[in-house]
Length: 97
Image (cartoon, rainbow, N blue to C red; front, top):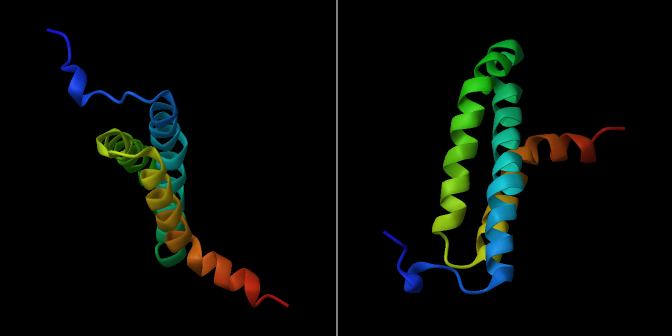
């Protein structure tokens, strides 16, 4: 049964933004979240569990990217989440002498 055309993205640019956000943006959010966990928990334990939880989170974020109406909005959401998760590292970089 073919998909209903009214639910498909018509613009190739929006489709490209959604695909790239799902692949690269989802991976960036997943890595930054696990770096945040490594900041507060044991690095070895987080690194071992990252093989499983990383794939699950990345796949979920990829699906979330295709549920969004606009590709640029999901990119803004993913980049802001990544900056939020990496903020402890960025703050440390600002105050290193």
